[in-house]
Length: 253
Image (cartoon, rainbow, N blue to C red; front, side):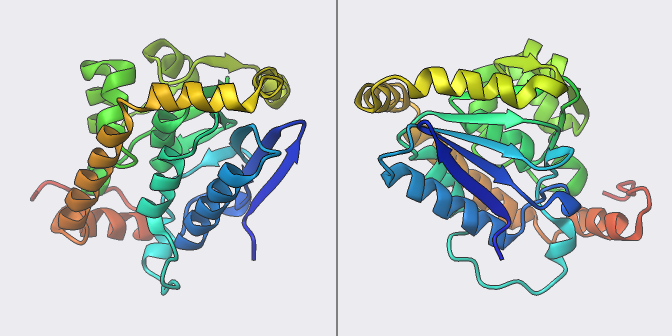
């Protein structure tokens, strides 16, 4: 069953994560579906700009921790396949963070050509609190966008960042009121979609040329680090505490 909606109008493909009951958290099926949408949009001549947002009150709560303890189908693309499709996407990519963004719901902002946030949106990279490390090339993109110190705080502290703080740090380009959020974002997208696709794609290609290899190298390094930490003592304690709805205890770690 599809958990992402996708429609094209006036050159703008609006893609909406639609697991509102799970705060649009990513499981393997959702990663595969989003990857396929990016691949399709890249080849689709009617798509000039892709806007990614979420249904309900969240943009995305990140990885579905509940799904980690359940049997899932073997992924077609997986996380790295999805990230490759986003990094290689040849057209303008806009993130419209309509609500909370946690984990990949925050780090994906670093892969966007432009990112906007609703005033009520807030972000968190909880990797350290899960006994893990950052992903989605954020160990490269955040430092480039925010500077080393602000990137370090967001990626290391696991603390919440408000939309206003994200704007000040450079993680998003602009914020809009909640009631007019998507109208404002779509107006920005339509400005770009009115321009010739060949020019948009060539300009993005030139802008991405010095960055793409570094982004993919970061994804590979992060994947290796995540594999080494996943299932470790700190990660086991974090997941167990989450499922038992109790405070995490890292005192012995």
